[in-house]
Image (cartoon, rainbow, N blue to C red; front, side, top):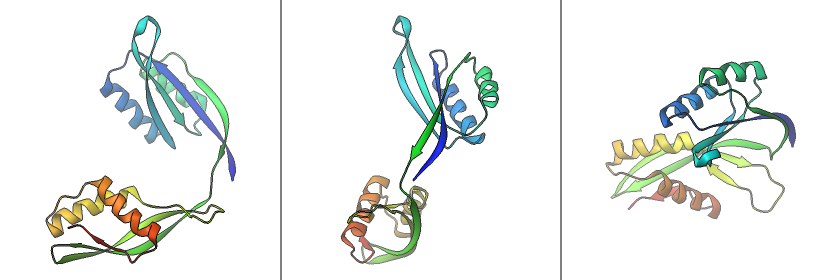
Length: 166
């Protein structure tokens, strides 16, 4: 599938890390779909940033925000976003640790790709919540990357959705 989009490119070398974080939050608050912050080297070997903003906001709104941070200009690039359609499913999941279990529902994103392998990924927000529930209910700390890998391996294998944390 494809749809028209807009990508803003902001460059600067005068903002602190905290100010860049504030800028990112404000971009999301104003409707940005995605924001990427890339480190760069500017003239005179100054460390700087390039911020890529995927947003439908009018250029005037971006200019007003840029002015607040002392950014005097930016690039606006009209784009075509190519993507696979995705859908979401909710699957039952049982987590086990030292003889105890926790039954939950996990949202997964299914990429509707025309291939034999259909990519399936657990939703990030559900994983974060699940790590907290595992700690509070089963009394064990489980890192998000490990939990994601365990769940994805069950999804890829088509196995029952039971994950052993032992």
